[in-house]
Length: 124
Image (cartoon, rainbow, N blue to C red; front, side):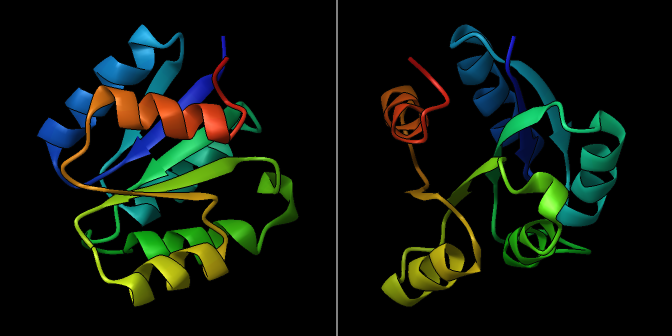
């Protein structure tokens, strides 16, 4: 079973995304900020295939998490999807340049998440 990580400071968003991903066949782990996510990534030791990352979080935001993760060659194969309220084109460009593979704006639907996972090759 593929494993996904959800990184968002909103417990409600983590629960919604977890349900969506579990229904799509993923095992899910969660982190409340980028710092916590880096530790989880380390503990999972290569098991994470896709991460859904919020931008605005305390301690380490999503953009910084993406940059830190992409600077480590061990995580080069992990597909990254930003799922955020940030709607400015400039922020989308920043996220993609930092190494995000896809970008979803909140609010989202289950169908949008599934479509993006298919685009990433993480879902059939």
